Length: 256
Image (cartoon, rainbow, N blue to C red; front, side, top):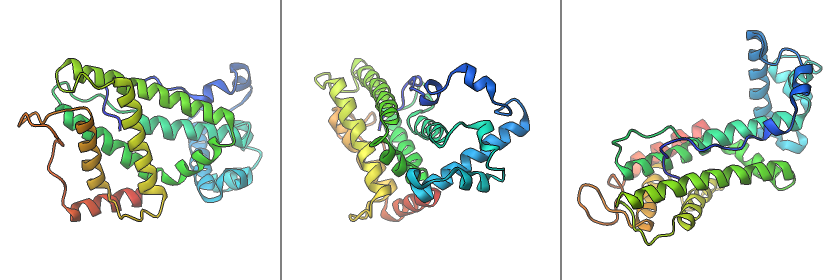
C-alpha cells in the first residue's frame, strides 16, 4: 500500500461533521472524567463486537449496553444513536489503517514501501470483521460512503506526493504518472487485503509472502532499483520462506 509518507495525511473524520458543538454540550460524562472516558471506551469496544457479530442492521443498542455493562438509557449519555457510534468506529478503524508513522530520514525507500504494505495488511487483518461491515454499510449509507471516499482520496494524494519524491530523488522512473500509480497501487493492496482476510482465500495466500510480492509489484511498477545492487526489481528482502510466511498469516488472522 501505500508507502510511508514523510508526514501523516490529513484524513476526513465523519464524526466531526455529524453533530454540532451545541448538541455535544448537552451530553454528560462523555470524557470529562476518568469514569466517563472509561465508559465511553467500553461502549465503543462493545459496539464493535456487536456490529461484527450481528452486522449493522441487526445490531441493537440494548446488546451494546449489556456487553459494556451499563444501562440501556445510559448509552444516550455518550451517543445519540447507533449510527453515531458506528461512525466513530469507522473513523477509528480506517484512520488507523491509513495512518503511518513517519519513517526515519535514512530509511531505505524500498523498505519504506515494504513496511507500509505490511502495516496495511496486518491492520486490515486485525479488523477484518468490522471492515466487512463497514463495506456493507457504505453501500447503503451515503454519508459513510462519502467520508470513506474523501479519506481514500486524501490518502491517495499522500501516496502521489511520495511517488513524486521518489522520482525527484532518482529512485523511481520519471515517466510513471504519479497520480495513476497512487490510485492503481494503493487500490491493489486494498483489494488484496480484502481478498486475503475476507474471502475463503482459495489460493492459500499468506501474509509474509503477500508483503514480499506486493512490494515487488510496487517497486517494479515504479521502475525502482535495489539500492544495494542497482538492479531493477528490488524487494528490499529476499522472498520469505513458506513456513515463516504461514506464521505471519496465522498471527494476523488470530488478531482479527
